[in-house]
Length: 211
Ligand code: HEC
Ligand code: HEC
Ligand code: HEC
Ligand code: HEC
Ligand code: HEC
Image 1: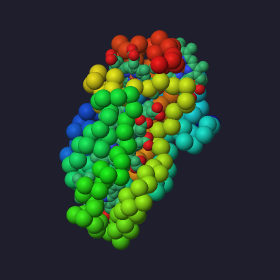
Image 2: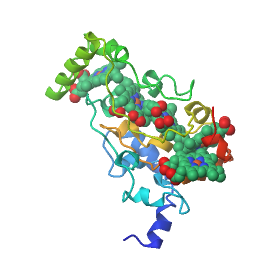
Image 3: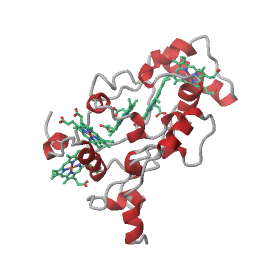
Image 4: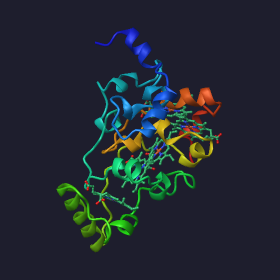
């Protein structure tokens, strides 16, 4: 059983800017790299209604930290973002324009993979063949959503991006992830902690109201 002290300390993680700078310049996968720069270490405050969830004891797996589902194609952010220096918004083009963050369509991939880039590893080649199949058949790639939120929730990417909240404060070091992982509880207490610190609204209807 977790002690009250651990619960308390657990909710008070701090952010090291040195570590962010380091991992941004490094091609190594740092031991604790994935969660570097995540707000409050990805944990909700002590008073959160669903406090147990951030220790992975209860709740559905897809709502827990560490959730990293198998994807139909092994897409790697390490290869694309870290090694090939692609911008997030090249693929997730809507983050600064709309509430949702677009996951790229297969056409976006084909710009490079139709003819030019065939893949290096055996698995990579197979995955790129699979990618071409989806394209040829006019099928969307059935990506499995990593950040699953309850339906009643209103979340808006544009508002956060425009306010200067970085991707990594909520999603962690995506460029270090060969497979995307949920690094934060994204529980109500976690959202509200940041809203209080940054002077954003904590009115219930802002997150729970109707559009
Ligand atoms: C070459 C295109 C490409 C680029 C560039 C890219 N991504 Fe992605 N991203 C994808 C694809 C495809 C998926 C869906 C498959 C997966 O989850 O791995 C994805 C998934 C994600 C997810 C998980 C979405 C979910 O299901 O909840 C996040 C978060 C994310 N990307 C953030 C980023 C960030 C931050 C950057 C920049 C540092 C970035 N991506 C750059 C293509 C890209
Ligand atoms: C700007 C060009 C570009 C775009 C756009 C792009 N990729 Fe890639 N992709 C690369 C490069 C470069 C590699 C490295 C492998 C190589 O050099 O053969 C790669 C490798 C891969 C691999 C194989 C990894 C391995 O182990 O060899 C897969 C799978 C892949 N990409 C999927 C995707 C998917 C899915 C998308 C669309 C969401 C996408 N790519 C968009 C340039 C791109
Ligand atoms: C304030 C926290 C926060 C920030 C900052 C943030 N995201 Fe998200 N992101 C979320 C949440 C919460 C979800 C789940 C949204 C849902 O299911 O309604 C999500 C989902 C996603 C998805 C899956 C598609 C979707 O809309 O559900 C992608 C891709 C993504 N984010 C990319 C990004 C990128 C790229 C950035 C930086 C430009 C970014 N996010 C910044 C919290 C954030
Ligand atoms: C790291 C800090 C941070 C986190 C974490 C965060 N937010 Fe925010 N959020 C902000 C800031 C800053 C603003 C103010 C944007 C503005 O002033 O336009 C904001 C604005 C919003 C708005 C729009 C408010 C309005 O007045 O219309 C909504 C909705 C929202 N956040 C929902 C969420 C939800 C839901 C979560 C958790 C899944 C979350 N936020 C997590 C920093 C954060
Ligand atoms: C900044 C965004 C935000 C604000 C403001 C907010 N909530 Fe929430 N709320 C959330 C999120 C995110 C969840 C989803 C928690 C989860 O996934 O379990 C949630 C879940 C809930 C739940 C379901 C119980 C649970 O923990 O699952 C209740 C009840 C609730 N909120 C009530 C309120 C009330 C009352 C207020 C105003 C005092 C409020 N919320 C303000 C983001 C917010």
